[in-house]
Image 1 (cartoon, rainbow, N blue to C red):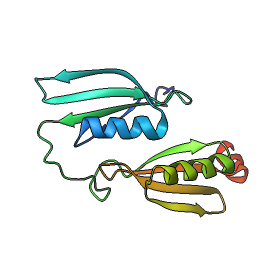
Image 2: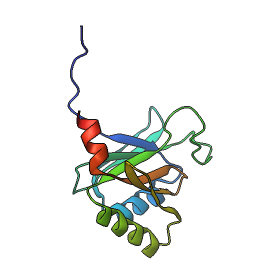
Image 3: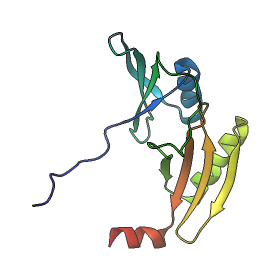
Image 4: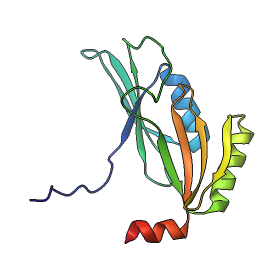
Length: 143
């Protein structure tokens, strides 16, 4: 018996050490817009949900009272990195320019046979990337 279908990813929540700093950073870089936020006293956290308007990607940013302020480390179990697709190499080049305009350190664009990728980190050290999947790779994925 096959599993029930999934229609897509609803949202991604990231734990952050400073809710205001992180949401300002994502708002500035990606043009994200605020959707709604709330404080959960019982569980000890505050969250703000935001959406990137072009793709409709929704992200929640949660600041937990019990967070000791340690930066993200992808070597621990959990999230390794978050990747956004771009539709062309020109778009990837435009993101490189945007990161440079904002003084955000990055890897530069790494080129491979199937994709080109640009890696950087958010204020909590979460590894992020923009990736352009080349047409040759798209045909393999679709088959």
